[in-house]
Image 1 (cartoon, helix red, strand yellow):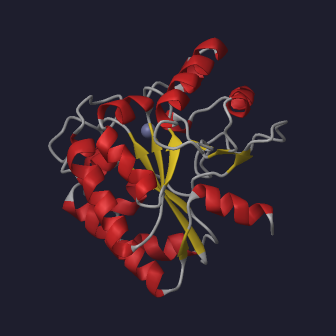
Image 2 (image 1 turned 60 degrees about the vertical axis):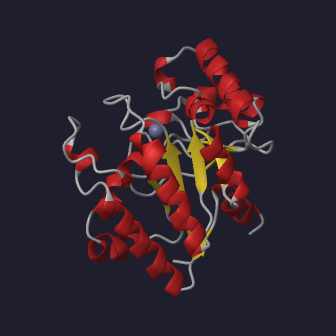
Length: 238
Ligand SMILES: [Zn+2]
């Protein structure tokens, strides 16, 4: 493995099961501090609503060398919106997020669900890259799509990184340039919350420790931590 892209989906705690924002208040600052200390950059896909509610935290994203991307306006699923609603959601999100970062070019849909006939909406709104697909989740093989949007799928689901590092690291290393993702709420202890087991196991300090191990191990192996945009640029000019 030479390159890795860490992405963070910034939203309420485990939506739609909870509406609290402990992840924003406790988890996101820890993540930003960890990335700063380790001197790596990541891509943060932020909902418009979280940016409106926590502007001071979201300012830190571009300021500390990360890429700010879009995760919709609310965390509503795009596959449950008609095209007019989807267009409005993207416009609203873009309007908020561009106050923090003019060059807003990367997008990931909530729940990794984005109808392919909506890709033209991303083009209209100035996006270049979409990470709403996952190689572990259908429909990954969608055939050829007539769109200028470059699609960069996620490699593993977020709970994967809460397993033991000596289990997930060898598997991750089989991928040439994995895209991993985490959520701020995973770095808050959710073990007693009424949410699915895969959402709550090993949340809190354990998750933070795992991410630290991942970063340090890969740094020691001279792996580069690229934002989605940086990596798309590299792939384009290969
Ligand atoms: Zn999300």
